[in-house]
Amino acid sequence: MSCDFTRTVLHGYLDGELDAARAAEFERHLENCRDCANALGAEESLRASLRRVSLYEQAPVALQPLPLPFGFPLGVGLPLPPRF
Image (cartoon, rainbow, N blue to C red; front, side, top):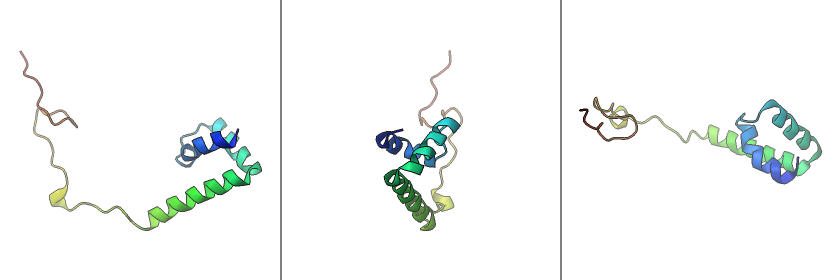
C-alpha cells in the first residue's frame, strides 16, 4: 500500500468502514511508515479533541422539528399527488 493510497483510506479506517483485509493492509503499512502513522495519530487526536469540547447541544423543544401532516412524504415537504 502506498502512502498516497493510505491517506485516501485513513478516514475510512478511523470510521471502521474498511473490510478486514484492507484494514490489515493499512495497519501493516503503518508499521513501516512513520509519516502515515503520524498522520493517523494527528487525526485521532483531532477527533478526540472535537468530542471533548461538546460542540453539539440538544435543541430546545420549541425548536425541534414537528411531525409532517398526513400525506406529506418524509424529507420532501410537498404533498402527495391526488389519487384518481
